[in-house]
Image 1 (cartoon, rainbow, N blue to C red):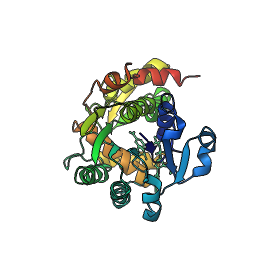
Image 2: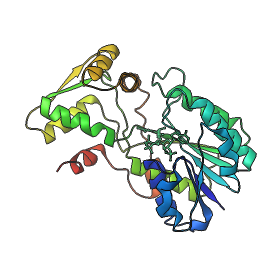
Image 3: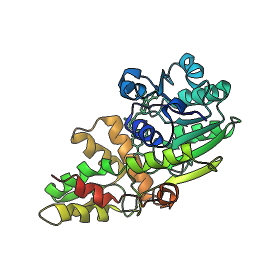
Length: 285
Ligand SMILES: NC(=O)c1ccc[n+]([C@@H]2O[C@H](COP(=O)([O-])OP(=O)(O)OC[C@H]3O[C@@H](n4cnc5c(N)ncnc54)[C@H](OP(=O)(O)O)[C@@H]3O)[C@@H](O)[C@H]2O)c1
């Protein structure tokens, strides 16, 4: 069986590829990317590296030929990727791929205000309608992305949020990669949807407690509305589009769309998911 991974030069793609190569012969692995030169080290192991760019559909069928099972990593072009990812799904079908595994988001339903939802819901729909077998990996928010905000709060004494009392089941990228690799090399995952989460759903108060632990003083939670949060992020130098995206995740958390925890990481990898607290502590000098 030949396994392929798109976006394989990105952090999730490379980490998943390295896990797959722990048990699969390199001759049965295809890595696709916009930057083949970035995977030269894996090519020397005997892995096939091909160029594929969702924005250039002419590259896609050739990139997927001979592949049985494909991890389609969602691109980072939020808002413009849906058409590209639909093209990737159609190309996978045309190339004869049997099973596509897709990196999605928790609860991709219309009521979820996270700005990434429309792209993921549309791609999930395209996969379900494609005639391919599929697996949805609904990865929660990455734990490491919370570290700078927690460290800032530890210094300033305030953790500003628009998530209210809402909780988020932060997960490490390494755990996401381990789950993706387990699905790629294992059996019985066709037509399954997995919530990929950390061990616990944490509120802003929980993050403030972590900030208090690493800082010199108590950290208070300051709750603001969505627009104020977005404006505050922009005032701190965050680009407008990113600030809007982050505020939308806060709104999604407040409304309960990120709070589901699951046993997926333990079930599929055989080890417990890493807690955000451990990520924060290990980031300390
Ligand atoms: N759960 C979360 O908190 C979280 C956070 C950030 C991102 N994500 C999602 O998870 C994905 C993987 O993220 P990551 O952790 O590896 O970090 P990342 O730096 O956001 O990775 C970007 C990925 O998008 C791929 N990509 C971008 N444009 C593409 C195109 N036109 N055609 C094909 N692939 C394209 C890149 O592949 P190449 O460069 O190899 O072509 C790379 O795999 C992201 O793309 C995003 O959809 C999730």
